[in-house]
Image (tube, rainbow, N blue to C red; front, side, top):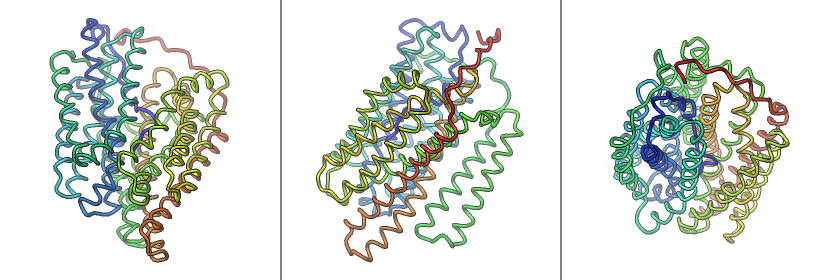
Length: 496
């Protein structure tokens, strides 16, 4: 999936002691290099997979629901564990958890590249998600431990830029590898990135942890949310082949929703919850997370199907399909800073209404252009999508951070990014079921796989546009003018 923003979920782990900040100038550069290499490996892999899905489906002689699980298995494990991964880094050591995450990610990537059948690939992708849930939080935590407050912004800027470049280049690089080497190559490049990452971390990155982190981790909460999301995703995907009235589908959905309710109850009574529910007492925080759920669900569900349309319906190469995403990435990279400055001046509410509306327009343009053979029309539609997300992302992120006390800004960011991942998981599961139903009905009417694929794509774009308009409506109804940052709390002696 092409991500609209890097996921700095471990800003909650950015606290560091003075001892942690004693790195030399060279040591800081080594720490930054390790963090960039580790996170780049994850962001590159996450953005490259969609372009390869049509080829994987053909080579492994499998189905669209199986391809949904190739994406969802990764997203499911990462979404359920990423907050726990950041907490584990604070408690047990950032370098240690980072190394474990990189090793898991690289090993599972090797299995992905060598998978003889789709079941093995799906399992390996799930393990990849576990590795990503550990290494992504730790990459920012390592930077936070190595750099003091005066230098940290510039270091995080380098990390964010490298992550954005990796996410943007992923579809193009992946498409070229699919066309000229093999889809397996997109996974096999990860071990080659992991080796220098592990070497640098072992030799040049000091261990650091948060001395104030006490108590156990909320593993039971992580297990509950994993089981809940897995049940809901299975039910939504299985409905495409079994039907909504099938007993297994109904049972999976009921169990998933029930476990989600149990998870909320558990978090309310847990002494160390991974999801502090009191944060949702803020109207702005609740509103911005609900609009994130709708907007990023639309984005994740729609972008899954773009390569299928371009490659299977219109015969473009995988490289061309990957290049189609470049306008989206370039516009966001070039204009996000400007959007952030404008939002600071006028407040985020207007941007959070206009941005998703423009994104909805982009999806409607994709719907209109789906029957076109001209490549440039897709570039125009994805450029409009890029403008819409550019207007949205910076003020959305800022509002997330400003809606809670400064001491909780990190966990707020982590929650918001986890919401974005969960949204992609659930909307992709549901829209895939709708799309397959439309495809099967269109095959009966047209007897043409090309026309059926176009009809399928149009149904998904319509769903995405509706979700984006709903996101804009939520922003209009719930977001108020940006609150002033609550007064900074005095740090305790142990955290200074």
